[in-house]
Length: 553
Image (tube, rainbow, N blue to C red; front, side):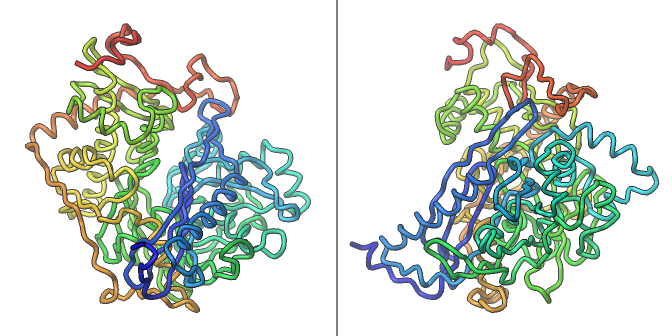
């Protein structure tokens, strides 16, 4: 068989890509960056109350082991010797918070996911303690005070979960984002597991000083976090420890990057001004600002982009963060049942080719950049009796593109030099209607690599380039050329602006739906049956009739 004769040149590098929706393990050829094999497992999300989003840390860990084992089996079927895998990198959903017992290895509570909103009242009370003329939180971290980041999630766990409080008192508790939990577990867990994180993940906790690259005592005191439970902060490319179990036992884990930083590396955005946009559960636009922290005047974050070696310099980025992108497709599938698989949304949208005046603002977790408006909730507006599920599907895809337009406009204003094109990656980029819509709404070309797994590729590059591994060169002349697919704008700029301005009207209507009552109170409202949020039917209540939802004109 042709597959069994496939030749593999050069060492291989594996990458764990642990995202909000799924876990994957991928194996690349370090000389060509070719993806040889992979396996993927979907991850459950739990919504115990309105605004709460949790995941099981043990399920996440088991999914990593499963993906590694299955990928190794597939490589064997391709006649590829897994002993050629010389290193493993880890890329992960950022901010998601785990606390576990270092003696038993057991999580002390579910992982509190980055999308979770339970800490809104905490954010409001903490914000009153920050002097108006000295926002030391933002100046040290580059981040606005928000439910998005780990510090307030950890604060909530320390205040509300007795098992966490007791473990801290007994000096048994460890905190980490998903990368820390995985690396600790994979390198031995209770038997000598390495408790560490990298600078990119640390920079998303709101406890890390992005200038000194250290945990900050003032920030930890402000949020009430004991510093002894924090992981050691390392660079994004160095040997942290060895795999202690499974098919790849003994292989070094030598790369670690938060998923958006990993995608920036995987897209090879190593020069100042180079940017990429990743379409995953959320949508994240990052622009490399070099060795300089650039602070935004237009609602963007300042974050650590990467530090590719202990003795290598740190690079920073401006980031526009959108909470809901691919998650809106999952919502249409799991909550409304409009589609049976995520891929079906493209077919539905293609039937009509327009939203017919229907606009969807998927503010299920409030609005992130550039608004940072936690009171917003999702709305669908502009409905008529003519509106059907195809128009709603199209509007959902448009919503992803409009949100990207908002953060791109903010980035252009901050940087002063508008992007001439947008480099994209992530699972949603396989949707050609979405990519064409994006080009139309931005009025610039959208450029997509033929191999879209750039997040995993970035983690693999960091791992393979680590000192002591040295199987992947990051020198510009050695980086593999990437073939691209290009989407050119196909509508005139005036039409694009009209659609965008109407979208902005819808965004304004989404704000102010949540008052001072917090999800922390645990008093779910009548609308709680849709756990990710609710939408407002702004035109015709009779749309509830099944024949208007289901019909196709």
